[in-house]
Amino acid sequence: MRLLFLTDNFPPEVNAPATRTYEHCREWAKSGIDVTVITCVPNFPQGKVYPGYRNKFWQREVMDGIKVIRVWSYIAPNAGFSKRIIDYLSYAFMAFGASLFVKTDIIVATSPQFFTAVAGRWSAFFKRRPWVMEVRDLWPESIRAVGLAKGRERWLDRLEKLELSLYRNANRVIVVTNSFKNNISSRGISNKKIEVITNGVVIDQFNPRPKNNELLVKLNLAGKFIISYIGTHGLAHKLDFILHCTRKVPEQVHFLLIGDGAEKRNLEALHKKMALPNVSMLPAVPKAEITSYLSITDVALVNLKKSDTFKKVIPSKIFEAAAMGKPILLGVEGESKEIIEQYAAGLCYEPEHEESFLQALQKLYTDNDLYHKCSQNAIKMADQYDRTKKAKHLMEILKCVNPLA
Image (cartoon, rainbow, N blue to C red; front, side, top):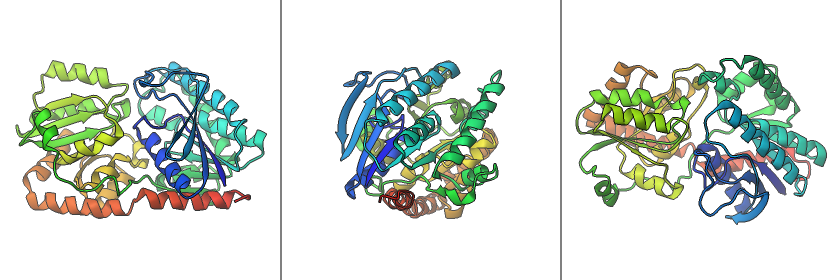
């Protein structure tokens, strides 16, 4: 079977979309599927081309058995509505053009920016092949959630009409949460064509291990109780709330914020202004190094802005930290909270509520029995979200869609 996957994020980028796509495609390639990915030059989230790459019209490489085609796109930092839209459109146009030269039996196109899905739809039409739309985020609903809708309501209404037409046209819709499925089906899309494949973790790569003492010494954090946030620093993640809260935590508790994003500079400026001695802010690290930083972590922080939209999401960083036995300190309501509480894999607090946050943190810091129970339960929870099993399940769905399989 030949599979064509369209995605604008792919390694060496380390965000959740890139990781999910790569880990699924790698498993499929291992099983003998002929997988081709059309993506752009790695540049997320800073909008700068990664070392070793050039923003060329067309370039090829092979990554763990995956054929990767990188096409030119307009590159802009992950900030600013208009530039981001141009970025998305340029990739979609180029990906569609490139897809016409790739032989395939089925096409998968992944959101959240569904101009990628538009490219998948066009490609499927011209190549007369079935296509599957993967929905990792309810876009453009999430644009409204982070406050970028002001003055753009008419455009967003049009984008939502396009969103619905894509759902109707796709042979199958893959979503990452049950809440997404409920949302889409409530808007008139057949429940039968929507499948849930949640995010997960490669258990073999993320497992419990001793703390990396060299890294602790390098960061001058030996003896500290470390709360780590590893991921995108964007509008949705509301990390300024966390910085304000750090003024009221015990001296031995240290916050490690690792990553880049649209809000990184603003957060660094706030950090400097507040002169917070118990916060370290580091740039994004390669995927291969994340386990080292998780090893020195005592509690993994997952935080989002307070919004009904984010009640539908399950941040993928939960599972990597959980697989390494790190209790989760979760500031997300809805389906994510239900999972953490179901497995007792950590503690939850009300998003953007300082007292709730400080109380949950204090419990994990002072109650050793609670901490160790959460640690063990986190490992058990991660076992239920094994990425290898998720990839196999998704491939079974794709084979049902593809009449040539």
